[in-house]
Amino acid sequence: MNTTLTFSDAELAMLGKTADALSAYMGAAVLAEVGSTDGADWVIFGRALGEDDAVEDDMLHVQIGGAESRVLGERGGLEAEVESYDCAFLWAIQITDDPLDRFVRLDQEGEAFEASTTLAELLPFALNEPELSPEDDIPPPEFEN
Image 1 (cartoon, helix red, strand yellow):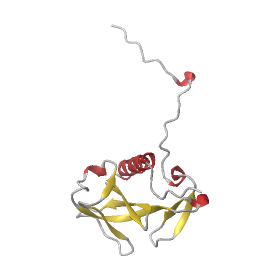
Image 2 (spheres, rainbow, N blue to C red):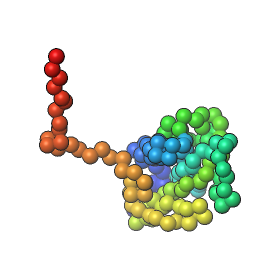
Image 3 (cartoon, rainbow, N blue to C red):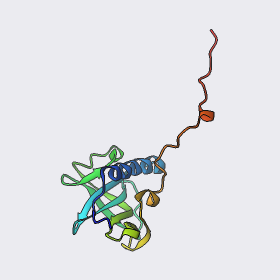
Image 4 (cartoon, rainbow, N blue to C red):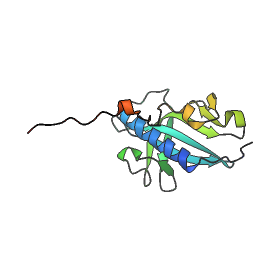
């Protein structure tokens, strides 16, 4: 049984890349902050809200960032390591000591709605670059002068 309840460096990099990909996909800054409760790591994803964003009544707000925070990725161009931002909660992932459900994805109510033994299965984007076969290797075009 794996009793390490912290994200590895590779997992932290994957989570940061996910926040960056979500920022590009959504056209808005998405922040991912890592924290720990009772020795178990978790990460929360939130879309930073601008002053002009319409705020829906059923939208769960979270504060992400600040001087003591561990915000991953490029931070959508925001200075999240200095200042905290009001964000619309997207989802969270926590690590558990259950080897069959090591990673659990949580909804806005804090309820688990997906679990996996690997972090990559819970992320919305595949972050691995497929290897190109020799047939895929296309030579650059030749230009005539």
